[in-house]
Image 1 (cartoon, rainbow, N blue to C red):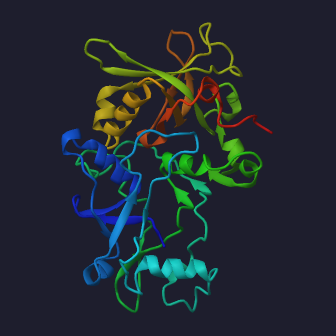
Image 2: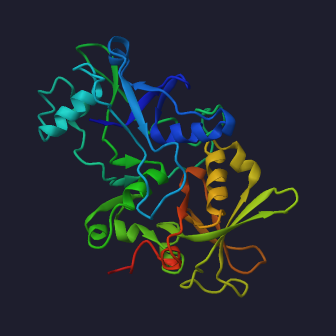
Image 3: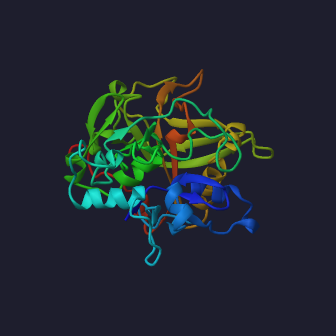
Length: 337
């Protein structure tokens, strides 16, 4: 049974698995322990209070570029109410859909039978209500749809499309990374009203063209520099690949993300980003970076800099280096292959 969100006992609220991970790594290391999760459906929790398991959210390092999936699951021996939204959604998927007009639970009639994301809605700001760690974050715990009301019970219930739509870049990347070869051509995603294949949606710095700037997700290996070294106030993320299809800017085509540390620390997932940087700098590891943003010429300096509107549009992956070839490998063998 697929569960997309759960009630976290320690946080006292419903969260998705990505915000559970952010909250976990926001805790001091000596106070870090796995959270207890229960069903997010209020009625189900009130009557049955079933446990829900969080899988891999307390892990940092990826063993390969097929990234570790973090998710909730329903453990055996923890039954849910038959009217629980997750039970209803599971049954709906098993029967392959249904007639929304006759379905007593119309909120799940629109559920999809796949976790493949086909809509990515990038965030446009870091500002929002406090997140699970009590600090500002870019999104509420789950990408929630407006409430529906079940007329038979009067209870609110959110319209759900499974994992098909998200405004969290990491959720899309974790989905995208599971595919390769022709599969990347077969799956499509809508970003900013434009439909792209998975292969077209994610490009390396040396592949992206000026016409695609700000319209594609960019990924690549990177090195991190803190400045100034003694009392750092900024993070420079320097990509190994350059923007080869761009004209030279002040004599260079290098690509950098320049972030004030104050912005990172104010972000609900800031502690997680910093921890991933730390892990990636350990021997035998490297950092893979994904971003959605605009590539601009640097001000009176060689090369280009990335403008990122929301830190939810920035993903770090600390990956265990299996070999020099693995570390240098691109996520796609070729753009059109």
